[in-house]
Amino acid sequence: MRRERQQFQMRTGKQTIFRTMTAGRKSAVTEMAGDLIFMLSSYPSYIVEAFMRRNFGERYFTFSIAVGISFAMLYPYLFLGDKVREVLGFPWIVFTLIFLYKSIRHRLEFRRFSMTYNFDRYSYTDGEIFDFWYDLIGTKIMGIKVTRYLILVLFEPAIPILIGLFLMITPFTRATGILIFFSGLFFCYRSIMKAFFARGHVLDTIDEQIVARYKHDVIMEGKPKSQTGGISFPIELPKSKDLRQDLVDSIEDTNSLDIWATE
Image (tube, rainbow, N blue to C red; front, top):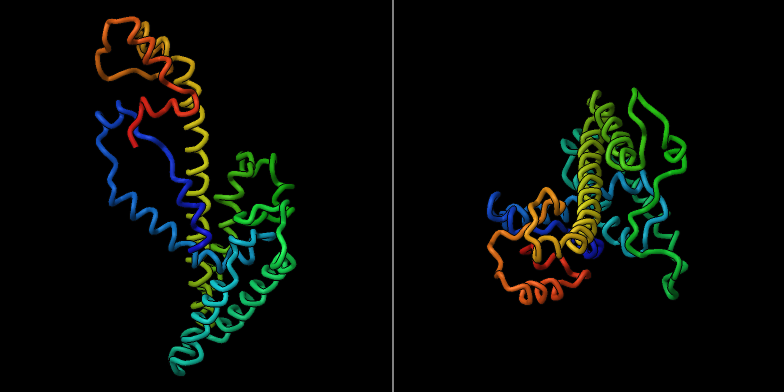
C-alpha cells in the first residue's frame, strides 16, 4: 500500500456552499468505497503495468508486492492439484514467470539507488509510456485527434484488454486471457481516476483565481452570478461597507476557496 500514499492525497473537488444546499451532501460511504477500490485496483494493475510502462519510481513499483503477486499466481498451479492445473493451463505459469522476470528488470533499474538517492527522479512516478506512443500524438484516428490523455486512458489500456479477449477464445489460454483482461480493466480504471484527480486540482486552481478576481464584486457590490463567474453568497450580507471590506480582506488568495466551500 505504500505507493498509494500519494494517491489518497490526490482526491479533490470542494463542495461549494451553493452546491451543497441544492445538490445534497456527498456520500461518505461512496467516497470511502471509491478510495478502497482505487487502492485495491493497484495490485491487479501491477500485472499489466510491468509490461506497459518503463522507468518506474523507486517507491511506486514495489518489488516485494510484485513477488507476492507472482507467488499468488504460482500457488494454485503448483499446489492445488491437476484439475486446477488443467484449468489454468501451461500458459499461466509461463506468463507468471515472464511477469516475475519483468518485475526483476524494473527493480534493477533503480537498484543503484538502494544506498544513495536520485535527485532527478520522482520516487512515486508511475512510469513512462513507450516512445512510439508519442509519435501518435497529434495524428487522427477515425477522425479523433490523438492526445496524451487518450493514450493514457484509452489506447494504452486497450492493448492488454484486447490481448486478454483474444486469449480467452481458446480453452488452452483462457485463464491467462481472463487474468490479463481484468488486469487491463483495472489499469484503465486507475488511469481514468488519476486523470480525474488531476483535473480536479486544475479546477481548484482556476476556482481560486475566479474567487480572487470577483470577491470584491460579490461582497462589496452584490453583483449577480452572471457577472461574477458563477460565485455568490447564499445569504444576505451586512450592509456595513466596512464589515464587507474586512471580509474581502480576510480572504487570502492562497486559500480563497475556504470561504466559499465546505470540505
